[in-house]
Picture: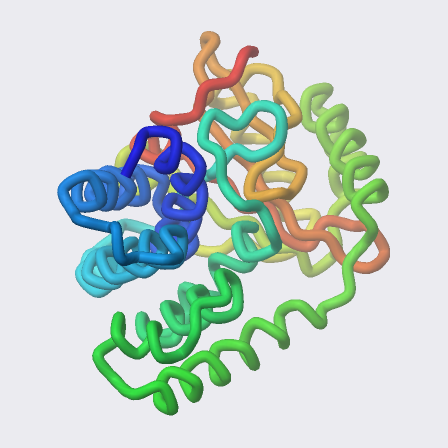
Length: 286
């Protein structure tokens, strides 16, 4: 495989690995493994190089995913996917659709590893069930059933009404202003009364280990934490194809916030990644 071919197909390889693992670092490792295997293989008989590479990436990711689920059981506090910058600030090219959003990755986290593989390979990357079965070690019929179960779970999440992209961006701009100016009541107005706040510190930094529920309570916590930890200004960015905020301290990204919005535009979930291991790859200018 030539360097040019690899450059063309690498986004798909990274994309399938990230959707399956929710980890930029693990997806990078999988992409490197796939490149080494492709470089050493005789692919002269392979007609569809992209499909071959994606399938190899899925097989390697499946192995990592099964061991990762064991590690997640001992993870300190809530687990959130590693933020993947998309849009103009992205350093890592990836095929962007709803399946890389934080909300969707959390839905897929609830699936079994075989369900997740079947869904991502078939429904996102259009890999035939015969090849999916080769990855999972089952039959095409069994793979089809797994994808169908996963599809129902994903469809239920997609059915939740939410505001348009322009409205989400408008609300997030107002949220950033209220956050930076310490406008507690402004934050309360932008948050749904049943909003939830999730923080992922991974035991590396101070973070709430349980969900915080209630718009006013979430606003109070955000207001208090910003003052206590001297967090700097927030910069708009795009994570997983969705508008997000990066918060700086001493010129370094120490927080990535992703959001969910209801149909009325109010914020229904704030998900904050604080674990420095999950932010090490994020490069943004203050």
